[in-house]
Length: 348
Image 1 (tube, rainbow, N blue to C red):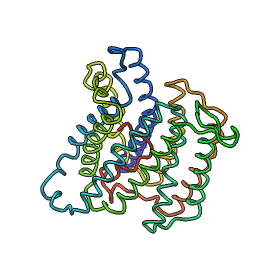
Image 2 (image 1 turned 120 degrees about the horizontal axis):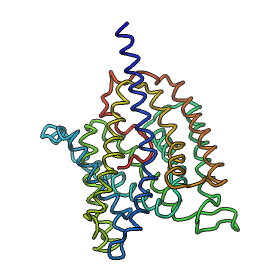
Image 3 (image 1 turned 90 degrees about the vertical axis):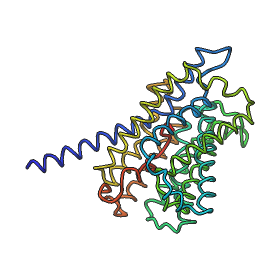
Image 4 (image 1 turned 90 degrees about the horizontal axis):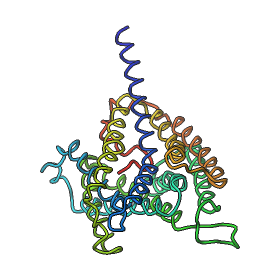
């Protein structure tokens, strides 16, 4: 009886941690936008100390410190000796794509369109990853999963092209619109999808902790020099402003550290079905968070596109359940190995 009660408590605890992590990740975009708005009200010599570039740069430093604390033991000679020249090249390419270009494009999108648009258009990543996995990796999926990907893609297209924000480019006599923010969000999703497939194709044997440390470190360096090249040497002038760091320490503690720790704790007793369900809820929660934190009210185009995307998510979830992957993962895969299984922006 005691063992049964302990197992029930463990499942409840895992679910609590899992859903707490999803809610934290869902708030990441809205919180990022909010603190940049706060920074715009406290200018330093006419500059916003909490610019999106500063948030990404300093946020990456906070994330790197957390990863070193958790996965630092994987930085050893044994791991380094296992890496071939091809591994280092693949690591470098993925670090640039998913550690610098992808996040940079997403943050650029946040500066040019609504959080709701960024969240919905970001759902382009899962169907694109699936399509590339089928093409390059020979992954076999059922009809439900394929149908879900197609429907989700249609929802993203509707969200992208129907007027919903300050979209600058009108197409087909004004029937369709496309703006810089939408383009950046779509490009960011494409870049992250390509990076995910390359990592599955080339880096399955590399410890995930080492992979994330290397990606974050190199991505931060590349982003720093890329921003310097594009915007000038004074672009990170306020990167070490005390006002910026007091907000980033709070951001890092809640969004990065607490979110990741709850995610790890939730994975220990959760099934694949529970994880898929929680991930499916992420875009809905992100839109709700955008409303609660920023007061963003979805437009008609976003309601339409979001509803279609939701149908696609449900179809994909059914596909996952029918594929027989609803099994306990804690006994087979460590929480560290599941770090990348959360979908969407996680504040890193």
